[in-house]
Image 1: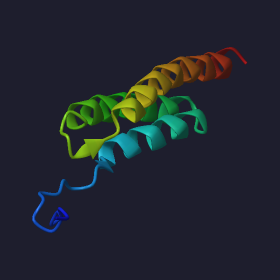
Image 2 (image 1 turned 180 degrees about the vertical axis):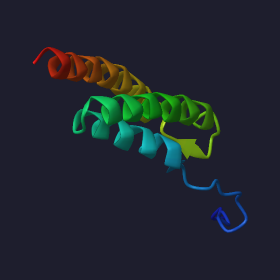
Image 3 (image 1 turned 45 degrees about the vertical axis):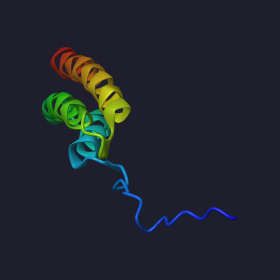
Length: 93
């Protein structure tokens, strides 16, 4: 006797999606490198804040973006350092 499984009755998990804040954190981190000192600093701070929020949201099994948020946090820190160097270059040069 053949055994068949009715997959329509099996519970399905929703597909995992990236959270909006994890995507925004990466966009802000990348944008911080292409702007001046002030806006670069503001975007880098935004990347860090969105990254932390993205990490919190990534705890949910229906969300992805934990590693994306970690990368954005590191890029935000580098963006702050880059903004400081841009500001120093503008003041000294």
